[in-house]
Length: 332
Image 1 (tube, rainbow, N blue to C red):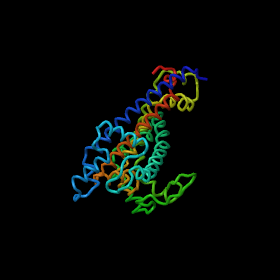
Image 2: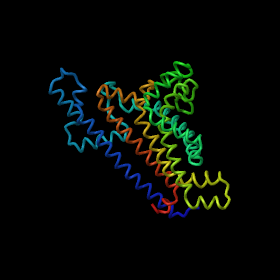
Image 3: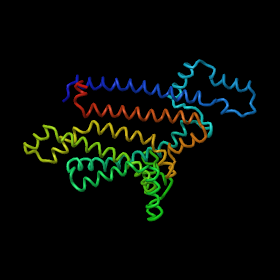
Image 4: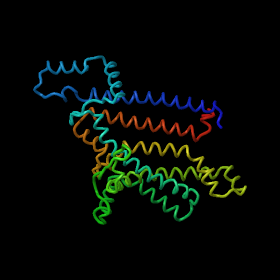
């Protein structure tokens, strides 16, 4: 059992990271506030051209836009904490409700692509690290480079051409049927929904698959050169135990970092894939906001992406405490 002081060191580490995350989110909220405040005039976006100057000033006063900038920023942060991110100019709807409507579809793609990439990347990375000179390992590495190099929009179009047009195996657009199970409504609970999600998830999977695979391979090669691994072989310990218990365990810290950052980046960079497959997620919502100059929606999306990255880093730091004894002992 770990000594209580070791866990205290881990808790101090996590508390420091939580404080840093709070500061980061305040900075992100400041950027969102400045975008909302100074990119265009909110009053002009809410009223017509025939509105008099007096009516505009009255509306500006009622919205608190004449208050000092620090008070406006504090009000904006307080509203964001409570889920109030303003009203969309183009939809005339609460931005938080719009994000809540579109978020499940993007989460489905991120989770499915993440599961696919981990199922493929971890064993492939271990194999290419152990059998790095084999023909199959070289083929896997070459395919991983191709997956990273091809642009996502081109890969999506090629998949639609092959699997939808030529083979007629998978649908080419949309989210498919959704059902509610255990209080969660998702398209992944239906066969129709899975077939709709498979191609866009595969496109998102291929890029992160190449990155994670190559990182696991590089870490395995580094660990297998260490003295304690050579000593384990000299003692006659079975190879599978050495590879999966000793070597893989010591590659997990950088791999966990890469996995966390890759998954969180999908929320920000799934825009093109969602556009190609007409997937009704956050990406299509952002493209609409850009096209309509919907500033509240753009600012809210910025805050949302910042929150995703911040929470992902907090989760990664929590995993560090569990898998790295040096953090629990206060060595790092």
